[in-house]
Length: 127
Image (cartoon, rainbow, N blue to C red; front, top):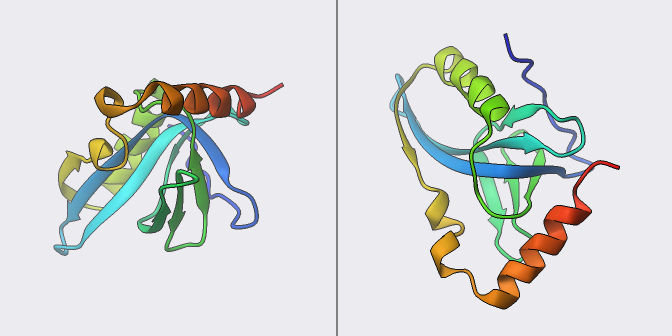
């Protein structure tokens, strides 16, 4: 079973191949969550509900205080998907919708933005 990890609020966790998913739970709560591949630990990650999002730094802050910096272009990660499946079952998700394009539409990224994204993705890679 995938290992679900909680991020420290002190330092943002860098996620590549990230997505943003909006869910509705059995209690009718509607929340948004990030999932992706942790560049440092090489694990899949899924967040608690997003409380704030900084478009300039591409950083999501969750209700638990964890911060996730989204690096590079959105994508899909098998490790993140496995963690997400576990998360959605344990939290009673009855409906989900991919809302990644609300945060970044890869078809609408300028050349300058793409270079900046590439540089941020390279900076977030483990050494």
